[in-house]
Length: 201
Image (tube, rainbow, N blue to C red; front, side):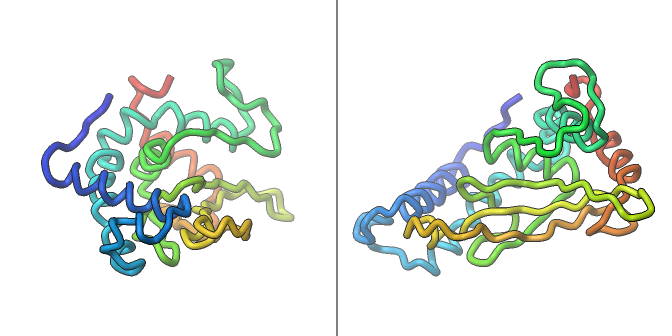
């Protein structure tokens, strides 16, 4: 299901993303926005893209239709369970990666009401090669809990091909008694409640 805006916001969103890609790919400054935009101004323009994504990808109904299958896979991996369908991680896997697009990240975030902020970016921005990470931890008592993070390299480090460690921002899990260390059982309830049954298979 694709729902795309038309009009000026869609054009502005695409323009903002093109500026980001020109800058991150190391284009000469004279070729970034025709040398008519500063780095600080460009960061503010990114809001046009995130605003469009808020509507197109993070709106609860749209996110559920597009992201339910992925959220179900993530939940199964965290629970170390399988439903026998293709793409499900094997039980007990220590590391699971699902590779997709910024739209997939925004769908999952919209379903689970996740939000992040990284230096140099707009709130909830999904820069190139960014990742939404769910970590499962176990306490000494055996209790398991989930923590979420958003990870991405800074735009200037991308431009310089610096190879630096990506910035890691904590992502609160809203609706959980402990938003930074959500008990797995509680996270499972939140995720299951967010699923669109018609699209979770």
